[in-house]
Image (cartoon, rainbow, N blue to C red; front, side):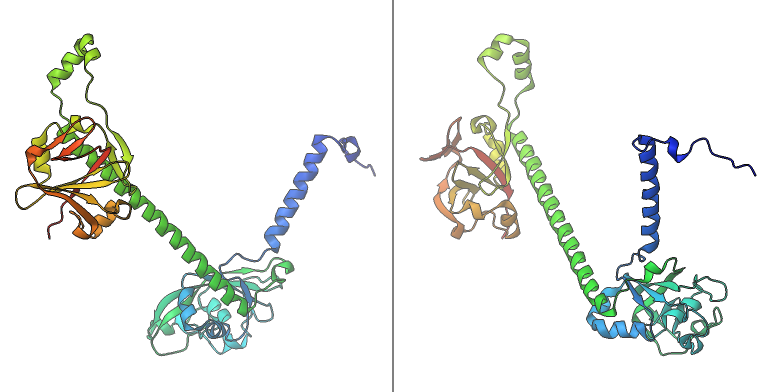
Length: 385
């Protein structure tokens, strides 16, 4: 009898060559992957427990009514040994099934697996090792009727009174492939710990999402304030087109005079967005500012102080110093409807100002005999009281 020898034997491969090492590494990797896939338990929220009589009722007693409400949408896998995965099971013979598709917790796990047609003992395999029944907890209602007593897969459900609350659905049944899969089953007592951990993780996710939403809202508010401040400045910053054309066409004039300075976005003492610019150029149209002050308050800030300019009922204007600008951000002023600010928050400087006594130049803002050197400003709507 001739023995055929393959030309490419193991001896012909150099052990130190990349071909040999890669081949061995790939075989080891595939074997390890297959072993992990078959030895690991099915991945579920609450783990895998051993089947027993009145298992769902025992879980309900262990968790209590409050924790039971948190089971909705979570899953649990139950391992049914081969000796009990037959129609000879006492619970199957007693038709311990309450419900259709959605079952009450007084039902038996393996009996509802048969009734839901997810497992048929006569045809489905158990490989002599048993079967995993995957359950999903959900909120449901049970109302007795002809449909609820319908016979399925050889089992007729029992009659019971109407009920609602946490119930279960059978999501699927899979045979056990390897004995290692049933080596580390969870105890019912561990389900409570896993559920508490799951609830804590959900709370952390919700808190994180809420914080992210708050940050987004703050960012939106800041962008709105910046856009609004830009619109306000455009009302006062309206250089004539003809003058701009002369500047661009005549280089000599460009040397002598420069266009209006560009304003910069910065932040107030209370960390709100505002604008910084030369006040004498922006407020050269005082008529427009006078109209704006009928519906809005103007806040001017130096490096360490904030001042409020508003119109009063007597037809004049009032300038006040804000006592603690750090504790008065714009969002709080809006929420408390504190525009113009209350007397407890301000120190009156002059409440009988006439419009002619209000002036702005490059360095100072004059309010009668009182003057400041402002660096930033913002407007806010006046709340009618």
